[in-house]
Length: 359
Ligand code: PS7
Ligand code: MN
Ligand code: MN
Ligand code: MN
Ligand code: MN
Ligand code: MN
Image (cartoon, rainbow, N blue to C red; front, side, top):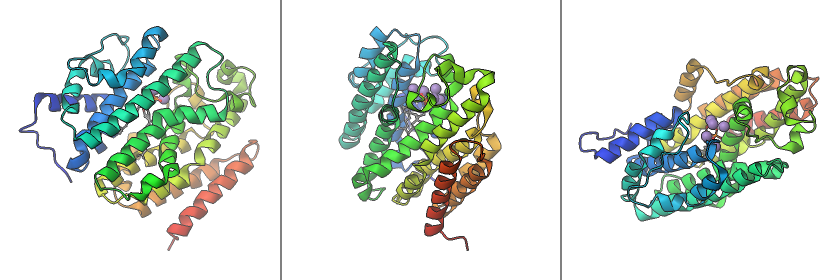
């Protein structure tokens, strides 16, 4: 276990950890336990991207102001004293941007190779977010095809995976082969983001944001809003099953990626969010509540998953196996996606069995 020395910590360093706690539940705990070499770089990487996302998510900021903010965020993160106080009062992470100058001070102390990775990903993500924010604004209806959906997930999560993998390899805490297998890294991000998008569907709908691709939902309802009407609940559930099936295709590549991690603290860092995600996928599967409110796995389940994801790949595979089996069981033969989901679950179960046979 790594312990941060809080005695000779600078004020700005302490502020960064304070904003880390303030802006995240699960990431904060795993970041603070990281190998000291990557502790501060990844804490700052998180805070930079959290700042960017706080601008992206705020629907009270006019697109005319939002677009340049997103595109130039990599410039702002280098400007001494830069802060942003125009987020709406209800934006949950607005404090981070109000005090962003502390993050900027600490960013200047990051080793050059790590800093360049953080900056490169911030440029790419900010531009990707801006493209989609504009597209949604000019409501030619935002995300239409599955390709567009996956490109969005690439910008907001695949790129995070790319940056993190580059940091792990640069610090010699992961197998350099992971840089060659960009498909595995991409799956890690796609899996987390897609499950987030399925779970948050109601919250996003209330905010007038839509991430589910038309190519999928139009097979079940005529209009996006119809998905939330009580009389269409069965159609909506079938549509959510389609979204779950689409997310499930990344599961085996995520397990494969985690096999390439050499350091225990990095393993915990990548495995905990994945375990939480697979448990969340089981929770949202055929669950009508997602169309009414925000749902979350229980604190108890989250604690259990934390313990299980900080051992080794075998235990994480057991976690995946358990939740995939539950999805398999919950699958409904009247659902048009029944056969495909059943096949996909079988494939994942077989894959796990091939690496870690039961007894
Ligand atoms: C740098 C640790 C480990 C290879 C803030 C971790 C939003 C799911 O959609 O606000 O706005 O509701 O709930 C994290 C791959 C990214 C992807 C991404 C940065 C895993 C800003 C997490 C986290 C790659 C863009 C949840 C992607 O936020 O989402 C660091 C490997 C941030 C990871 C966004 C989403 C995170 C997310 P939304 P949330
Ligand atoms: Mn967000
Ligand atoms: Mn967002
Ligand atoms: Mn959100
Ligand atoms: Mn969220
Ligand atoms: Mn979300």
